[in-house]
Length: 97
Image (cartoon, rainbow, N blue to C red; front, top):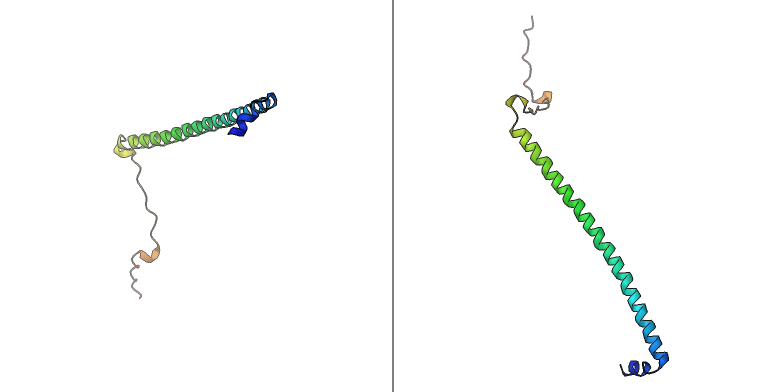
């Protein structure tokens, strides 16, 4: 610390200290600009994510309302696939003459 004080006593030392100070300030400004851009990008991404979440919730709610407010005739019936023939009862043998 004492060497810095002794350097700042001369005009040349003071000039160098000012130059270093300006360089540090310029670096800080650049870093703050980068940080500002990152924060802005994060806010945009969070907004997009929240909007997607809300859209999914709204769609689920609309489907629930459509289902529970539908007439009995309009509720879709789930059809099961045909069972394989192995699970069906065997045909009865015919009378052979």
